[in-house]
Amino acid sequence: MSTTFQLDTSTSRATPTPKPRKRLTVPRIRDRKKDGQTKEPLVMLTAYTARQAQLLDAHCDILLVGDSLGQVVYGLDSTLPVTVDMMIAHGAAVVRGSYHSLVVVDMPFGSYERSKEQAFDTASRIMAETGCAAVKLEGGEAMAETISFLTNRGIPVMAHVGLTPQAVNVLGGYAARGRSQEEHDKIIGDGMAVQNAGAFSVVAEGVLEPIAIALTKSLEIPVIGIGASAQCDGQVLVTEDMLGMFERVPRFVKRYEDIASVIDKTVAQYAEEVRERSFPTADQTYQPKS
Ligand code: KIV
Image (tube, rainbow, N blue to C red):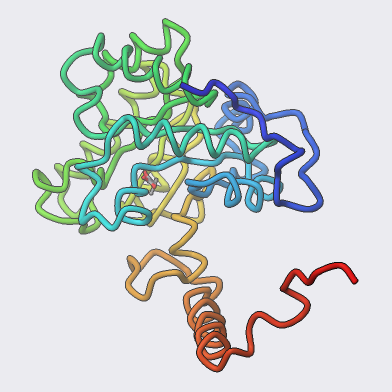
């Protein structure tokens, strides 16, 4: 098992090789919200690979190794089959590829819900084997005891409320949450519960905007929105979604680029050149020394 969390600069293909910078810490992220206000919203994106982390690191405060990698990287139809081993492999790569951002790794479905002891075993393994600074878990009040157990034992926890994709089979789909008073009250109650249990921040996903605003106003810890509100203390998106790697994305995603088209065009050109034998040229071949 590799415990190398640092980039090997002699073998890195990235030029210039990123310069080490002081990494943001959990208390610094937590303290970006003071007296209920966050002057500078937290910038968070998902990252799954070392190179992706290198490219995102300078612009982000937090890199989330989300279990969304199940769909984005592995082509699974939900996050449910994602394993701890997958999270560890990608988490270690993202830590290696970053210097500045706080790296948070998702605990996958089934790896923490049974008991607080099970959660500790999973979270401590993820932290020891990736070098990340915090874990994220889904759930509110039901997870409060677990969050308290972890934080009291040195494991910072980011919580995740509202639309929790690991509960897709209970929720019946990925629709926005909070349309009934009961759901509204549950989301606010869940936020309060994870804060009181010691979570240093909370992701609010797929919730009606007024609820996201109410949650942001009522919590002392930063609320990071996804499909929530610009009034949250920060925002997170799945990087491949915002880069335009996929045609079908949730309504809350802004596609800042159309990388899928760039790849399509580029690979079409490569294929044409291979087929007509115009690649490789002399520039890309080794010749005997004369
Ligand atoms: O898994 C993930 O990428 C996430 C974000 C969408 C918040 O949990």
